[in-house]
Amino acid sequence: MEDKEERGLCSHLSPDGNTIPQEEDLASPLNTTYSEDNKNFKRSVQDAGGGFDEALEMAGSWGLWQKRVFIISHFSQVFCAMHAVSSAFLSFTQEHWCRVPGLEEALDQLEDPSVSSVSLKNISIPWGNKTGYDKCTYYDFNYTTLVPQLIEGQELEVNLSHSFYNASTASCDSWEFDTSVFKLTLVSEFSLVCGRRWLMATVQASYMSGLLIGSLVMGQLSDRFGRRTMAVLCALATAVVGTVACFVNSYLEFLALRFILAFVCSGMMIINFVLVMEIVKPEARTMTGMMYAFFFGSGIAILPGIAFFIRTWRYLELAIGLSSFILVTYYWILPESPRWLASQGRVDEALKILKNIARTNGKKLASDECILKLITLDHSKDPEFSEARPARWYSFIVNTLRAQVTLVRTPVMRRRCFISFFLWFVSASVYYGLIFSGANIKADPFLMIFISGLVELPSAFVFISALDKLGRRPTMSGLFAACGACLLAILAVPEDQIYVNFFLVNLGKFFTTAVFQQQYLYTGELVPTHVRNIAVGTSSMIARIGCVITPYIITLLGDVHYALPSTIFGIVSLVAGLLTLMLPETNHKPLPETVAEVEAMPR
Image 1 (spheres, helix red, strand yellow):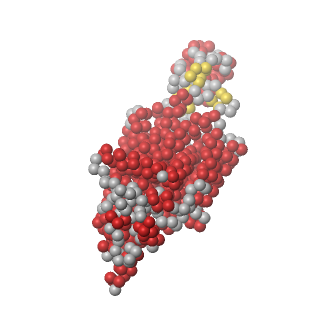
Image 2: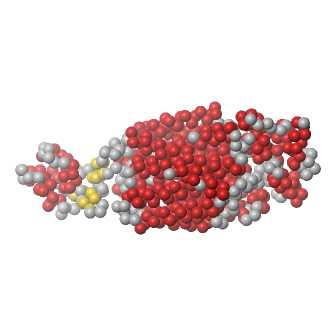
Image 3: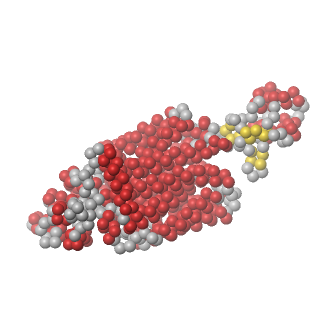
C-alpha cells in the first residue's frame, strides 16, 4: 500500500510515470535552452506541483514549523527598526541660540537676580516674527563695557535694547541648548546646527549608506554561505556595534559605527525575509510578506517609550544595543533554508530539514529517493545555476557580477528589474522621509514616531485581502496613488494647522508602509530562485540611494518651506503608481525557478 502511494506521489515526475530523466537528458551543457520535449516535460511537472514546492507541500508548507521560524526570524525587525529610527531622538535638534561672548561675564558683574534667560535673548539675539529667535547670529557688541553704563534701578532690557537693536550681527561660535525635551543629543554635543546642520542630516544618511551597501553585499553572502550562517553573524554584529556606538568620542567615530550597524542590519532584514519566503507555500507568501511591517512597526512604536525615559543619547544608544543581544539566540533556534540547500546541491541536508518539517507539522513524507528527485529537479540543469560553486573569493566576485548581469541581460528580466528598482527607490524614500518629517510640521517627536510606528500595524493586515483578491499590481498601484494624494494635500494646509498636517503625513505613511512591504514580496515573485536574494538585495540597494538623499530633503529643503519635502514625495509616488501597471500579475502563481521560465511567461 505504501509503495502504491509513493508511486502515486511521484508518478507525474516523468512522461512515462516511472523515472526522472538524467541531468544530461534535460539540457546540453553547451546549450542554454531546453529541447521542446524537455520544456514540455518540465512544464508538466510544474503544473502538477512538482519540484521543491511539492516536496515542501508534502512536509507541510504552512504548519507549526513555518510559523515558528516566521516569528523567530521576523522578531529581528523589532531591533532593526529601533536602530533605523533612533536618530530621530539621538540627533534631535533642540531649541538653541548663540552663546554670546562676554554677556554672561558682564551679567555676573551686575549681579541682578531679576535678569532672566528670556531677557538675555531679547537683548542679544535678533528676533524674526515668523522664525523667532535667530539660531545662528547675535548682536555684535562689547557687552562688558555696558556694565558701568547701566542706570541703577531700571530694567536691564530697557536700558540696552536701543543699543543692541541697531548693532551689527555676528555668526555664532558656540550655542546654548534648551534641555527641557532632551538633556543631551548628538546635535548639542557636537554642535550640529547652523552651518553644520547638514552634518545632522548626515547622521541618518550614514545609516542609510550602510543599508545601501549591506543590502547588496549581504544578499550575495547569504546566497553563497547560507541564510542561517549570515543571519547569525549579522545578529551578533548588530548587538556588539550598537552597544559600542554609545562610547564614541567623536562625530566621525559615531558615523562609522552607524554605517557598520546599518550594514549588518540590512543583511539581517533581507536574509530573514527571503528565508521565510522560501519555506512557505505560495498562498502564505502574501501574509508573511505583509507581516514584516507588523514587526518593524512594533519596533518603531516601542522606541518612543524608551526614549521618553532615557533622554541622553548615549544611554539611549546603550539601551538599544544591549537589548539586541537577544538576537544571538539565532545560533540555536534558526534553521537553514532547505530550498537554498537544495539549490547548492546539499540535498542530504535539505532532506534532513524537510523530515524535521514533516515531523513538526505532523505530516508524512514519501520515500527519500522520491523527495531527493523532487528537490533536485528544479536546479538539475538550470543554465544560470550550473556554474561550479566558487572556491576562491575572486571566483565569488566574478559569479556575483554574473548574477547581477543576469538580472538585466534578457528583455523581460530587464524591464521587470528596472521598474522594480524605481519603485523601491520611491517607496523607501517616502517611507523614511515621512518618519522623520515631524520636525517640518512642528509635531511632538515622541507622538510622531509612536503614531508612525502604530500605523504600520494595521497596514500589515488591511491590504492582505486586497493583495489576494485584487492582485499585487492594482493594489500596489492604488497604494502609491493614495500616498501621493495625501502628501500633495499638505501643500494646501497652513503650517500652523499642525494636527491636520500630522494626520495627512501619517495617512500617507499608512499607504506607503503597505506598498513598501509589498515590494519585498512582489520583487521576490518576479525573478528566479537562484537570483531572488540578489534581486531583492539589489533593489534594496537602489532604495537606499533614495534613503541617503532623504535626510537632506527633509532637513535642508524643509528649512525652505515646510511642505516642499512632502510635495516632492507626493509627485514621485504618483509616477511610481503608473509604472507599477507595467509589471505582470504574480498572485497565486508558482515562483519561477529559471530565467528561461521568466522570459516564457505571459507579459
